[in-house]
Length: 336
Image (tube, rainbow, N blue to C red; front, side):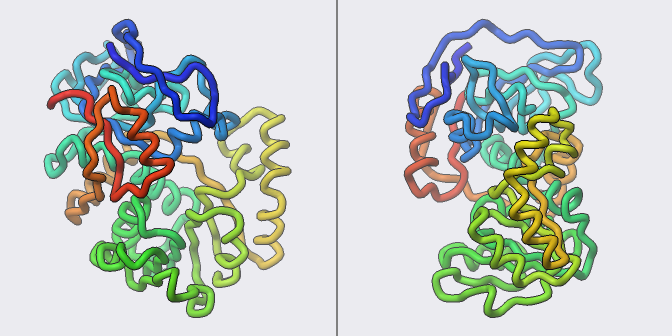
């Protein structure tokens, strides 16, 4: 099969297309013929090694974290899936490889694609959709009637998080660019702030929950608008000790992440608030729930119009890194 790999961590985008042996599967895995793979910022982090303490790669490694496709083979212990099923997945962190003609993946990370979605649209859902689910349900433990703020929520993550938060009964405030305002409001956001014209910290207070997508420099402002007892989860700032402990990382990583996240932990605790960090883990059952909600609400993730195949994976990665994609960047690998 054809696959896009790296041999070493590097800041340069220089993936290699290779012919690899056909994959074998274990009893608990399914073999998926990949139709469409999505390109994400985490793919760039994988290439540079920036997240290797959380998601180490066994080099050489095939790139790609999420995809859609058709099951071609199932392991003897697999239940609920069969050859021919249309499925999508955020691949297990220890076994990524969506930029390839096939992937072998544990059945626990796979979900069936709702009839409402084609393969391209489905490929854009797993990573951001499950991230939003875990942020809201697991990290924030949200309650209906309370208020959520998503600074920088006008992109792909916001397209998943806003309708999911509304389904959970939250009041949702979003900041972002002017271009995305109407779309995010149509998805259900109660209030939208154009970051070029308005400072949300001058207009918002007593927020119960924050999902940070902007990073450590924004967190003091985000904390300033929160009510006491509020909880903030970051997708981009520093991992902390609680993150390492909850993910059962080795003792030395707990120490490292404890040191890295101490400033933000302390800043939040001093104000009677809580800081958390999230690096999503694949979960097929959660993906099934998210996809059902998105299909019910007829949410269509924005897809960038540029066409890429495996031979042009480098250009797809460069667009995510240096360009201004108009939605999720996709790599088309096979015909459905």
